[in-house]
Image (cartoon, rainbow, N blue to C red; front, side, top):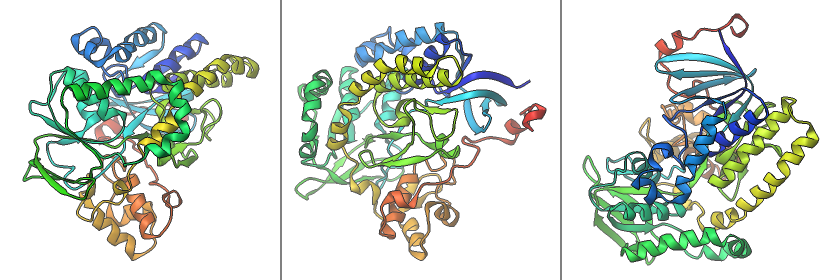
Length: 466
């Protein structure tokens, strides 16, 4: 028999856990579906087991704080199913999942998507070589098993995450060969309009300054204004090539390279559902259009956390609660007046947590180079298509990303465009002299996750769902 719940929450990170706790306080039945083996999301990954250990100490107090939230979540009475992938959502809302080789359909009156963010795909020549991975991937290894590279690593990129990870790596006993800082020079001028926000959020600024002190004390070499990054090697990473701010091309030996160019909202589920999206110029990505409670253009579907727009862990927590209040109101557990009353303080808190975001967006904008890779750069990892392949197809006729998919297979691999979608859209826009927001994004088709015939055959549906 198909299970039925009041609200299905997809994702058990900060937003998902806060949403579930708030929903349960209003007496709603809640099912939390999560791909990971334990709660926490990326920011608090493995927090329940790691927080009490020495690794938890080096990750910091903000990481360890996630353990308290995890405890409150488990005590809330929400049903929690880890290692469960959602591969389709249909109006109604019917949520199709897979776990341990079996599939199931769950019915929910409402859905809260708390799927978070992903690292911005930033292709460069050699980024698919063994030995090259993202800073986020390296941080996962550190959090889950305290794995650190045996040899000194190079870090290339910009934004707060490389700073944080390098500081954590140093505390864990790791070695850093150097930091290739790709932040555009002079961007601090663009951030000046938000200097007042920096004063109001002194504690957040102080954290960044503390990380910088740790890097200086450890003697980490920082090379500013890096462009034209290339990873070179036969079968594995062996050499890095880059251009310095003065135009000089440098080559250095390398065993491990960690890259990062910011994060973007995960929009695959909202795209698949046909929710309305808009272009965010500050973060150079699409975000779902939401009402004051985080509800999308599809009634009964809410988005909470970084999937609603990059804001960080604190903002994700608040957004989760606001979305839950919206769902409770729609379920008849709160009147419109009560919902406004319950959410007023949360909205004020959210405004405060997002106060510094415009300044960070101005300081660390995605570089134009990310969206215009050289012809020899692989942009679709799944199908091994280069930027040159995409440009040749785009030059033949005025195609959009979806026609480009049919012509080249870009976006048809297992990641379904998560790694190449924005790059392909930018290349198409450049060939057509359009803004990228005008050319659109891939249409996302089910299944959202790879599905075997055996898993599909295991699905049992009630008559009303067939």
